Image (cartoon, rainbow, N blue to C red; front, side):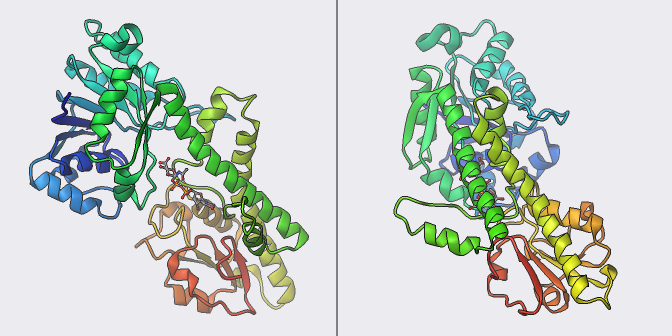
Length: 422
Ligand code: SAJ
């Protein structure tokens, strides 16, 4: 089977680079997104997200005529769905995944599906989502046959293939990483491998769709649990007056120990979200995964308490000053080092909470942005040197490269959530 035309549904952080990758291999790519602005930007050969090397790739594939974006689906040999899977609104104790975007994608491609097509779901999904997608498509196109009822003879092939790329390294990792391919039939898996081998140099490993879905959730939950262990250690060490950074370095000298790093909390759109897809399906069995989520989610508030305590202690040592005259410097807002992505960032949450309670000035240093979101309230975005020389309390929230060579006066109060200045 050959794939000459590939349609990618959802042109975000995963869909856009994947579409550009197919186009760079001279496949005809039709990208589909509901966001007209994103579609227009892409059709001008530009990009609406920040990811190294992606702009060159998209520009080249659009100007050479291999890649075009649209708000409506068109016939293709393969459809790759990379839409978001957020939580359902309502703020329940255990957040539930919302498959609404996948259902909308199914509705948009169903009218143009043709016998022989391959449909691949890439969105991070709860176990069973691929079977649900297949059921929606079968309902919408009753004259076509699907793997759930016709197995190997089905007109349409369906597979789940999770993405595993690290933001900031997407273009390289898309090519190099191994891929898990979960076909709903052996033919679906074989077709999906052929599709991905267009640009993937890593190994493609076959399993069923449910195991592939769970593999993605497991990878990110594993990292969340490991970070929770490091974060819990940081709380324990604070109580018993042990340097957690030195402790972890020492423990990691053991040949079979590899502890991750504590921080202000866990951010981003994956590690802090995906474990809930396991917990919501198996709330009684997923105890450790659930506890890890709670440990990581509570870390920002612990940091806020530390700041409040530090302000109190500072005022005790300086009875001539009042809280209004105490300036706090916050270093970093992004959800991890050396990126500009502030969404779901524990650093943002901390600065916002500190702003709510602190009477004095708050200076923010974030070398990767030009302005700070209004949700932070009255804070001032300043240059690194200005914060270092004027603040009474220095709160390091992200280990951006710019901060690593900074020297803070030993007489100043330092709260270092990443162990950079200690
Ligand atoms: N973090 C720590 N301590 C650490 C490592 C990370 O506190 O030792 C924090 C980071 O500061 C950040 C959060 O965890 O706030 C998540 O960062 P990350 O670098 O661990 O992961 P993401 O969210 O950028 O990307 C992850 C990756 N998954 C795994 O490494 C298992 C990536 O491969 C996935 O493709 C991505 O999620 C995704 O899209 O699911």
